[in-house]
Image 1 (tube, rainbow, N blue to C red):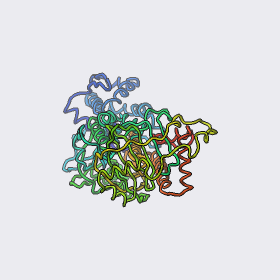
Image 2 (image 1 turned 135 degrees about the horizontal axis):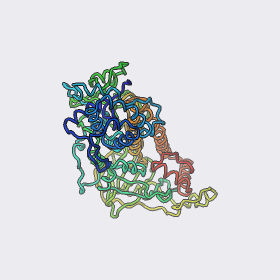
Image 3 (image 1 turned 60 degrees about the horizontal axis):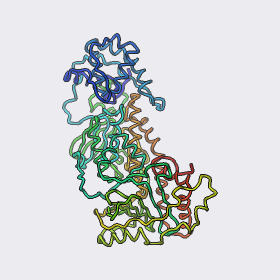
Image 4 (image 1 turned 180 degrees about the vertical axis):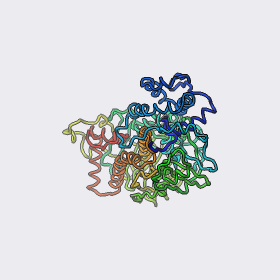
Length: 598
């Protein structure tokens, strides 16, 4: 018999499932209930084991129950084992393993992970007098996954697990001291906008729709935008992007962070995912080397599994402790998980701070605006209801000055910087018209005729002004034994393109898919060999985006005549050349490919 980690890993049948199945069967005395989602008909307990062992009946029953909640799946098998004999039922397990490999594990061929079949020692465990008894004498709890950090990316990862058939019944702990996580609805419709917002790309919108959270976002303030104007202070050129240039409906959607957090939390609470929130902070994490012991995993206590390297142990600030097969660090740029795992980072601090706040207009804004100034970019992003968000990058000295000035002076500074401040309005005549690129195969962009526009004036400050330093950080490893990093814990980027949270959502989607594939083949979800597949998927995409953003930051931090001309030529080309514009829009929208010619 092969030794494997057991527990609530999807709807798969093993000896540990039978232990819990017996306990639940004794309490509820039922086989399965018909559910609207699966429309599986009630299966009576009078099915003969001899019929079950026929291949065609196994196909019918096993594949039907594969879509059901896991507890219903092992209720069925436990009852048959109790009535007809455990040895007879277990004799069909090899056939069911083969069906699993061909039907449920369609992605198995992509994984080079040894196949670990269902346990064949179920009969002896069913008859054990102590079967199903939980560990006593310990306050610590065991989980499949512990997510440290209940922010947008951490909750998105939990929701993504809940959306997948093979991972929706995992037992998950979320560790975060944010008191808002203890409340289901913490947003009031008459609340003023939060100065912290995120620009959600079409790819991230699709992800949030797939996991079921976007419907909650649409119940609150948000703003889709289908056009964007970018220019710099020299007035030499500009670029306008329209969703129609890339055959898209929108370029993105600006959403307040508190709306995203509330929407993800609301959806997570509505799912079947077994979860518990620990309102505390992580203080220590212990992971021991693997033991060569061949003792059956399901007979070991949590402490024994921990000492054999099969669980990570987490100690929290409030005195609680827990064990988990996998610890996911979603705890931001100063990740405690990353620190305790000994994962190093590469990066640097920019000599820049960002001021963020919300302003109000006389009319609603439907366009995203960004101007590159000598000290850094200034972005004006629509968030709905005549409000826009300001993200203004500047030196630390300037940020202190702008944060402390009066509201009227600050609004004048913002309007000046988005109009004639630092230089004239750009015109296409400086570098010539679109005829300059008429030789280029692919034609001229449909939005080439769109003229430069002056952004709407800010008439009122609608939030406090917040300032924070900017940096670039990248973890050398995204995964180690029983640890995976996602979001800012793995990478921190410059906010000039609003890509930070979108990269984090990409991490959450990828890691949940890799875990689902691991469950499909029965592997330990904390094994490095599995987690490195997530790293291999996400690291190239994240590094590429970080390099692009860092290149923009450096290119626009130098005021030098010839370089200014080159930047203007780049703007001019991006504005006029259709294939280039389409590639830039596609890349910024989350289609992870380099912004090269199509």
